[in-house]
Length: 590
Ligand code: ZN
Image (spheres, helix red, strand yellow):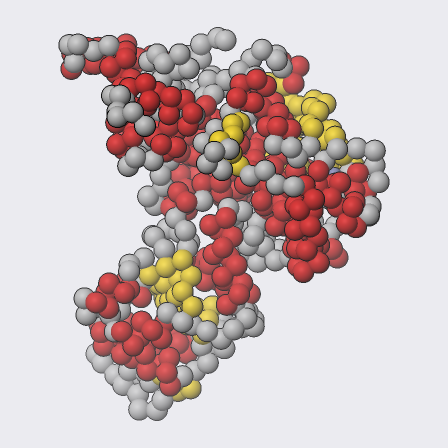
């Protein structure tokens, strides 16, 4: 394999040996990860009831019981909802497997990496995948692939339950393919079954292209996003149905985007409470998109035709907040030259979103409580209470219980707001959504800046997927905007367009399969300098001693969690456990 030369001066920028383009004609069964190496990732520990695929716990389930579950979900939720659920579950499996490949074979060549997905998909028992052809160019964001799926388990189960019909039925498999390829490629790739045994064809045949290449992928994408409304078949041929991951900038406005389990559970909570009149408290770190969720709640509620009014309590000086919330009468104070309605009045018949509610001072809290209880407000300087019909959605990035305990937040108001709390997950707990979100932001900014969609380079996606995102979705959004501005028209967005040197995520260090030093995995050029510093630090340094130290430090960093420690070193759990045992002093015989 040719060494990839890094054009970027900063040695910490991870390089990759992925060629940015390639196709199925370059496939070589001897290239890592080979079928045998992938099979090695799967192991059973029957004694303690666990099955592992590398460090992910797996489940051996009867195909017929999967079929029964699927049938029951279809019967209870309807075909469209069920299709979304299974597409998203498949997407998550594919995204997990893409992560396995990225982490264990960071230097593998790209054709082998894409082929690995077809093998894992087969290994996991869903279907036997036969690649017909695939071709991709990460620089220009081009992907085209065609595959045959033999004896798909989902098709078997669907036909057993419902017979054949008009629509393709291998939803989990389609989701898997999208999750796997999108989790490696830097672009959202949409797969579609053009033939399916569930439609009476001899075999299932799928095609994959980017959303842009399809041009009409909104229907397919709607199943990936737990945030989109169930797709109505009568919308099918419409060129621009309501917002989906592909159309975050449509007239319907932006919507929360995601397919991950954490995102799904937040969206389900939102969908459950939306039709009720209950007050909702959204909590989550800064930048998780609280206003976007609040807007979505409003759109899903019976008040959707009414106004949505937002106020960030932290952005208004304390002495003005009362006037802002409840309005002022003319002459109420110096400068009040005319009467003005407050946010409560403006939100009448709709939803009032109060962000950073903990920033409201105690007098403001009392007035808010009164407004919630009495359903009326009084303007500053006014004498007549005004009836208002407003649903309040509050949000906080602080622990309000703590603020109550400290006497900074009224307990009665807390209980009034906390009728239905919804916790919004930080981005690092929904990493599988990163390709979906990055794609949606890029499309929006390309539209705003009149640029063509350059997409992310594969290594930029790789860096993003292991970045911790202290600033959450907003940080990703800013990175995409910066990346688009910093890159040339038509050029893929690369690592140096996203991060300045000082903010680059740390590279991953590891030990290779023979137990020898292979650090850092992503940057071979850095190894001699590291060796220098190691020999300076530790006169008696040996590879064995170093390995023992790495193992111990990783275990320490991961707070004793073996799977997490193994990940830190780019090892499988079994490989790590083997080394751990090797370096542990012999204990009392057991
Ligand atoms: Zn099928």
